[in-house]
Amino acid sequence: MTAAPVQLGDGLTVSPLGFGGMALTPVYGEVDPAEALKTLHDAVDAGVTFLDTADIYGGGSNEELIGQLLKERRDEVQLATKFGLVGNPAAGYTDIRGDAAYVEQAVDRSLQRLGTDTIDLYYMHRRDLRVPIVETVEAMAKLVQAGKVRHLGLSEVTAEELRDASKVHPIAAVQSEWSIWSRDVERNVVPAAAGLGVGFVPYSPLGRGFLTGTVDASKLGSNDFRRNIPRFAQSAAASNQGVVAAVKTVAAELTVSGQPATPAQVALAWLLGQGRKFGLPVVPIPGTRKADRIDENLGALALVLTPAQLEALDAAADAVVGSRSADPTWVSEGRE
Image 1 (cartoon, rainbow, N blue to C red):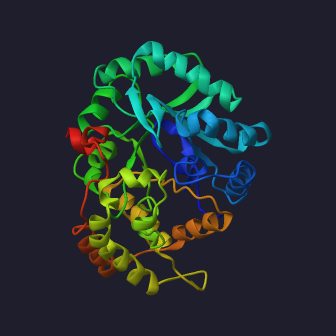
Image 2: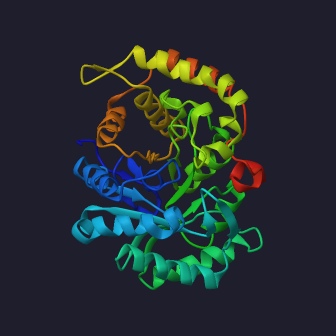
């Protein structure tokens, strides 16, 4: 990959696309550990060196998987992980903890599973509404002072929460869902991040696969996490095919390296364009289990959408039906 690295907030420099490790857990179906490790190596080989995981993914197994790669390639990687959720994505979460004692316990467990001394970017995964965010960030800041963490991040915070946190310690990145069909963060959180010099790391930039046009919501497996999300309900998913059609139409008008563009490339290029529009660094973290998808995603870095194409995508996004979360307070939209 020839694209230049991107600087998020607080001086953290990462590859222009990241890799979402959650895809390499059984949350969307069963996973072959050997194939998962090969996919990680393929990502780093291709220049996707910003790896994102969390202590909750696979009950810690995702951190252990990435730890296997780090044994050989720690110096090549910018490592992000998260704390705060108790439970698991498939069966449901039982608690959220942001108290100082838990922060200290969680980082030590993550470091052990990852087999490293330092985490480049440590996120608060979700808000513990019982604990003021400044208390959680104060505990996270102590991890920086101790050398266990280099930079701090926050996931699914509101603009106000981000501003409060930034008064305690510089925040390198906000990670929240953002894509053509999930745009609520553009109202408040994205402008706040831009004003504070905080980078944005969109998760599920391909709409949990829906925007690629390859997902049939009626055929999701019984253990597929997406069955819990309202916009994947059969009635909503049928209505939402309009946004997929719009993405496919734009893709048919473009080429990447002499080949027809794909819906995934269009969706990622749209997000990168939104970063330019709002004036902040944006580094999406699509996840995949297949090496060829990594190369496909990187093709988005060469795409520039026309004003007419952007207008068509905006119109389709306005027609999206269904919440992006089963619990509105789980994400920033429900607390703004």
